[in-house]
Image (tube, rainbow, N blue to C red; front, side, top):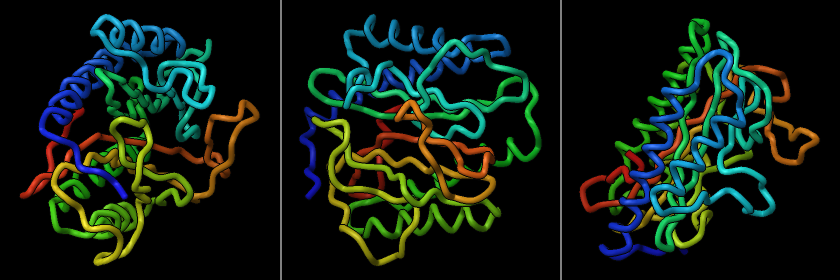
Length: 247
């Protein structure tokens, strides 16, 4: 079962979350046409280490870099390489920060220059679904209430919820219980308790929800080649709602 964190542990995660948020803020400023993916990763790692933290992802189950950088039909876990960003791309950037014994995890998807109307709608709906789900979070509610809210918002917009990738608990370990799919049924699942720390992360596609993994063993891509997007925050459950720790 997921564990609740103490006030002092949450304070540490809040500090780590601010570092993670700073990373994404700087990457958002830097992600422009012509920028090389590995340079974004280097920037992220520099910021993390300068702030007294370590990148959670680097070395996790053998993962080679500090961030996941996923372009267009790449949904998540893309390994940053020497490719350049192009006008019209969308790029998902996922970062984990390990600070004073605790992890925080957060992600955004960014439009590069002028993007298509469909791509912009995908980004908007994915991010909005995250915040719609977070509005449902508070001590005493079922996790399924959050999951169904996210699913309904995405599917009403005509997009697909990814079925075989989930959010998760986070804290002393990068991935803790519970597993948090972005679909579900209200009134089911665990009952949220004050102090639980969770990584809520809608993953959404324009086309089918089915995915495959590239030969690198990490990069998850949409099987039909459609665009995918990903937004994520680490939150702590409170008596009356939740606090976003990665902002």
